[in-house]
Amino acid sequence: MSITMRKIWMGVAASVAILSFFPAWTGATSWWMPGIAFTVFAVFLLEPLVLTWEIRKRGEELQITDEGVLRKLARGDSEFVRWSDLREVSIAVTQGANLGEEYVFVLAGTGTSGVLIGQRLATRHDLVSHLIKLPGFDHRRIDEAISSPVNQRVLLWRAAPIQGEAQVVPLHALPQERQRLH
Picture 1: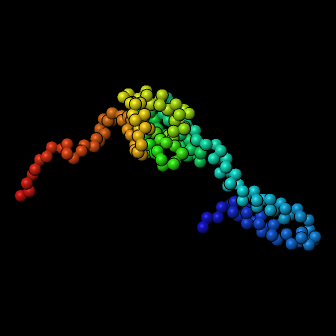
Picture 2 (picture 1 turned 120 degrees about the vertical axis):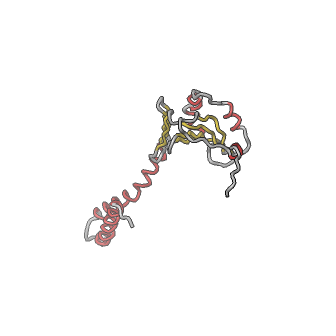
Picture 3 (picture 1 turned 90 degrees about the vertical axis):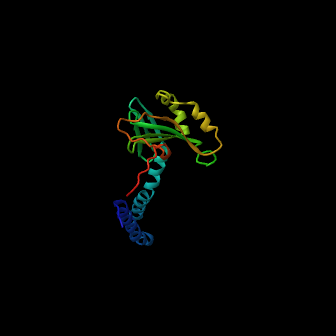
């Protein structure tokens, strides 16, 4: 079990408040000691709630630069993809899923780089005007995907294969050679 300093201070403050309460109640001492101890306990108790509220209030941020796309999440994490590492752009349509967003842009890069950008954030930062600059990007597929009544993921753009990159070939496209085992 992990005991943090916050929990230790809460325990000390609660102990002091409890032990000094009876003498203050009987009039033997002042109410200052249990009052201060209870206040310290309350501050450490409410601290996580206040921090969580501040994080939620901050919200998400999106930065689109010449280098790439950075999304800073409200909880402090971030997602980033460089334009040079971008391999695929798609849109995931979630109509009727009641997620608060009707669609999400998926910018997938090489390795683990990638960014998910919701409808509101993409609209606020005019993401599509930046995506149109990609060679061969088809913006008409966005309208087709959004007007679709089913949940689906639609590919909007794919980068040309990198030299030496593996390409998936369907099994039926391979030449069929039969070899006999002797």
